[in-house]
Amino acid sequence: MKAFKATSADYDARIFSFREKDWTVSLTLLNGREHIKLDLGNYQRGKLKGRVPTSAQLCKHRDGSYYIHVQLKDETPEPIEAKKVIGVDLGRRDIAVTSEGDKWDGKQIQQVRDRFSKVRASLQAKASKGTRATRRRARQILQRLSGRERRFQQWLNHNISKAIILSALEHDAIIAIEDLTGIRDRTNQRPRNKTERRRSNSWAFFQLRMFLSYKSLKYGVELVAVNPAYTSQNCHVCYHIGLRSDKRFKCGNCGWHGDADLNGSFNIANLGAVVSRLRGSDTLSCDVQGYQKPPASAVG
Ligand SMILES: [Zn+2]
Image (cartoon, rainbow, N blue to C red):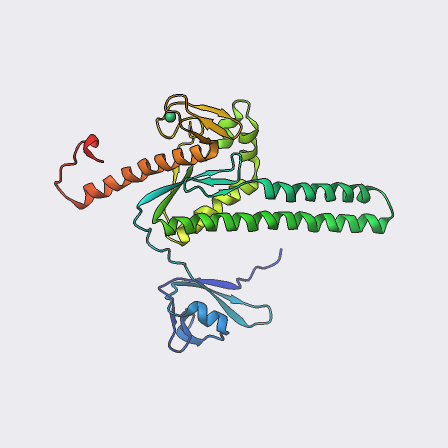
């Protein structure tokens, strides 16, 4: 067995500090505390400026030189004071529909996908016959294409999530989406329809949700997840179960009719408002001691 020699050491706030004035770090080493000048480029200086990092890792290169990884934690901004809730219906028929009326439909992405799959089929045919060189070349192109398709989807998700966050910032709004944790377990117990199958299997759909959650943190927009039961069946005006046909929704009770996904996004926004209001009343009872909470019916 080979002897293992440690080549790195972890430093926390007790034994590590950074000084911007002369770009040095102070480290506790075997022979005591030492100030070491950092060899920095403009990029690193820009990143370190004004920061107070509290942890680092000292590493030793094979050639004997040392380098240091400094961990910078991004401080997330305080959530904005919300005036309204934007409901976002994700991945049902369209990629995303918001209660503000923004909509990204699947048409464009479907066209691109169809084109990819056509080219893929013809390349696969080439990859299975022909000379060894043709087969290898076809395989290479196939690999590159799958990377391109993935990056296209990622670019699209990045832009959609960004547009939704911008809309929330513009309207001082909270974002509400459906809580789909456990959708795989739940839906495996009974036959799933096409939409549910797509939602639970699609990495692109989960990527969009992930982008939304990390961007909401980054920009201080509150994101709430609501119970997805009935968000697509109920009328958002009177809460009666309505009729869905293809992309349309019609309420037999109050007569509201319109885009089915838009109705879904309104329901999600309504539920999001309830969730965030419940949370708001908790802070109220903490702030004001001895204050008698009015009955729920008196709260507007
Ligand atoms: Zn109705």
